[in-house]
Length: 237
Image (tube, rainbow, N blue to C red; front, side, top):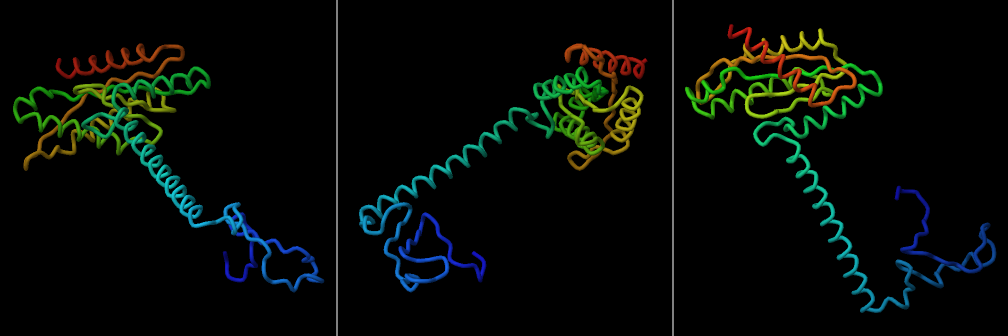
């Protein structure tokens, strides 16, 4: 209550003044309340046992509220764990495919444009064999961090498994997506991966396809995967 506000009547402290008038006439001089109720219970009924029961009940209600808040927080944490890659702070394959399905539904309904990019870390096995699996993990983390830092919040990044990532670019046609893939490929190669006091270069191959209206998520991913392997084959050739 702000300073200067008049008295307010609530269920927790209702004041009844029989005979009082709006203009402060006859009966307004009666300052002592004839009846007081607390939480809907008259004062005369608030015996020590009733007060004790009310206190216990309020404590139990508060305890239930605390448990509910903890359960909601735990549910939120479990949902995040279910959607995210166990090693990287990106979507896992299941969550990525779910987001792809959602975007494809919007494409079918609203004629929205979007493109799919498959990103593959080149020579992961060589990195693991030569420097250890920790170095391979560092290279994967390196890719995830750089890609996430260079795309929009509306775009979706996920690890599809092993050395492959999927990137869903919303409101993006084929040409624009290819330019973005080139930018990401260059940025990943130019910034060295730091590992165990040393550093090395990670290189990727990207396959880009614009999502076609009416196709399935599986078809879109197969097209992007094929495009990525074509790029990798040209580099190796």
